Length: 274
Image 1: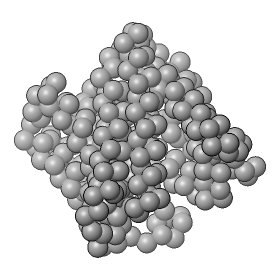
Image 2: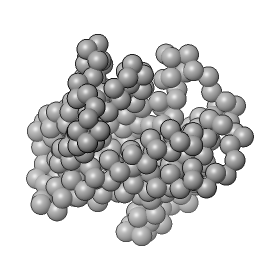
Image 3: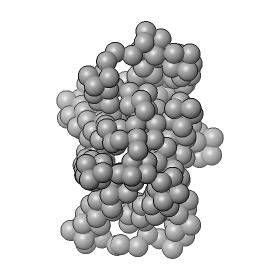
Image 4: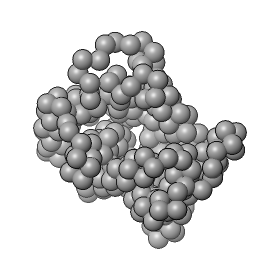
């Protein structure tokens, strides 16, 4: 059941990112992100009420801190993408974002079984391959820094949510989304950019926000049971986004990325068997 709930996370977030990517291409990136975050907040609030739970103050504080780290990670990721490209930034961020919760879970809960451990290692390889858009990218130290920093921040985000008590339900996600909304809004005001996205972007922002809320909620429930596996699945959302871009936006994948999808399927099989 943990695996099934965990898989809902990358599918939902990957589809949300696909929709958000295409909407943001019309311009007003931060305004689009803000609208998506607002609807993500609303959807997680609805899910939290529906799912129930009794969060402690500690759970809510961990959730709020996850909003800070996710915002910091997003800035570093965008800086890396815009100044150095995706060739090194994307795979480094994806793998680092998965390594952090896996490492924390190993310290807290001990080593996983041999089969599950093998699945985690193979999964990290798959995430790296899927994130490699430019096989010829050199080892740019600045790109490496952006990738590592954003990956660590995203890894901290998933770890903080995973460390909440399983009795808290989805409630820890809510203060995190409040912080994330405030964070993006502050950026917009500082840069004096438009607060509202383009008129036609609202319906798809609603859909992306709802899917994002489902993804974050399902990840939190899975991470409360098994942080390492949920953390790896969380980073596989990037691969789902790539897949949707190929199917519906006509983008092409490299042979390395195609191999990465195959490796990810093997990793999933090992984790399920374990």
